[in-house]
Image (cartoon, rainbow, N blue to C red; front, side, top):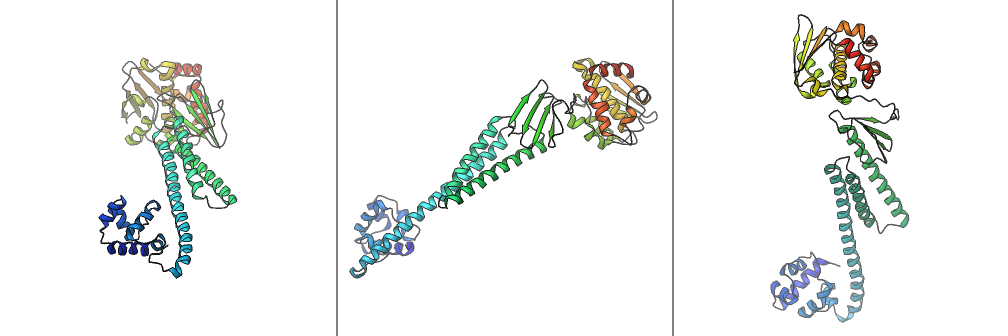
Length: 383
């Protein structure tokens, strides 16, 4: 069916009847833009007004669909051809409409999933709910687009689409967990304890430790090497204060202000604000914290922090001999000699520079032993 030819024919017949586009449109109860669209070959009259149009233009429907006046000799042949062309045209329009609807559904579903990932926090179940709704909407669109394919092909394509979509969701979720250190959206099991939440997701487990505190941190276990009993637990923010991060500030000499500042800033108590100064002559380091010591000692947090900070600084800055921690209430002083003599396994921690496994075993894990912390603090620190 030649739309351009039909459009020109409509224009010719309209002019033969001494009608403008506006006048023809008014007779048909439509806009002049619709008439202009027909005559430009960008569309065809709707079936509901086609007979009325033909009556106004003094032509038959067969003439209209042929784009010319059909003589009696070829009338039947043209009629049959026009019927076939009309069916094909209708099928094509329906197919195009379905394809447009399918495309819209696919993009709406993808958009809903994207919004779910960006608006809702990972802890919110709404994020995963709307992601699945987005999958459903886009899947309906995809199925609609492949409606004319054979049953087996539709089945295969639909399966592949759902599989790829789900894999993509899990990859995006895993990337978000790794990059932003957050809980996974698509965990199939969530176990909540007093200080820890465990999220079991396909292929990995996330441990959220010190939940809802300033020292909350996440451990992402992709190798299945931890359980709730063996996962490293510390009262501090391990991602910031753990040896895996602070080892980058290892230095032979105290006095590198940038390095010293980064190290102190990564250690516990830095969250309360501080200033520090170096005594180069005596190889001493003084840190003044902007907080009263007794105010922060719930569950021995002060004692654990000072012990952890002292061992970390002595281990990472090789020539520091004394450290003084000042608070608005009290001052605590410790020397390298005291640490060497009194702290068990300190030499194992600094073995070959820094032994990270020994650091975690002999310092980090010891921060969970309140009796050990109290004994070490009393023996080592001079108040």
